[in-house]
Image 1 (cartoon, helix red, strand yellow):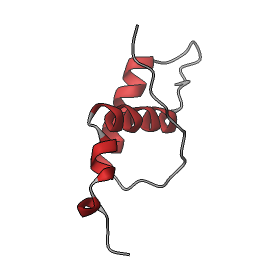
Image 2 (cartoon, rainbow, N blue to C red):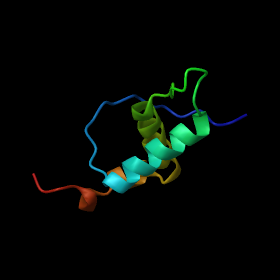
Image 3 (spheres, helix red, strand yellow):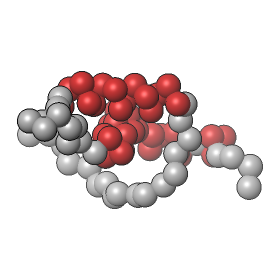
Image 4 (cartoon, rainbow, N blue to C red):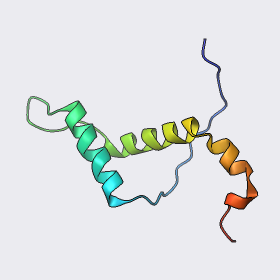
Length: 74
């Protein structure tokens, strides 16, 4: 059984390259495909959020956040 971790959903603004966003939109649309009317029925903003969340969990953002040296000047 996988270890459960305590998480919370946070809505934020994220700065990313246009290339990253284009890749997510293009790949998500390709993976989902068109419906019978020829439309894509996928929330690409949701895909962005899921990918960023996965990245933060897999790359140990908790450790990164614990290091005061990673904080911007206030």
